[in-house]
Length: 106
Image (cartoon, one colour):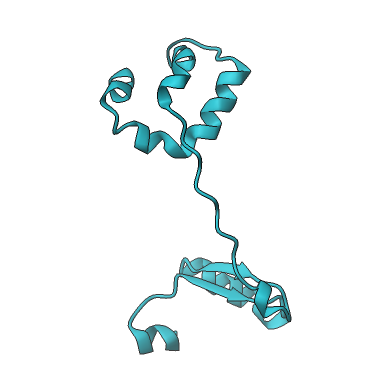
């Protein structure tokens, strides 16, 4: 609360080690109530106390998945199509910017 008042900005994420005082119900409850993301870090190894970045997905050409389009119209899709579509899920927003692809889903 003091930090928020000093900076005038809300705390979004707080990293802390696994010491007992940080694992009390009141402490965790405060985080949940105020929508603060808690990230537990390793104790005693500051060089390892970072959160690993998630690599960006490799977005394939959406036209490679034309054989899977029937999965949206009539079930059941093949296991191969399901796997391809799951792998490409982070790319859908980019795909929807392509007019030819967008028309299929409209």
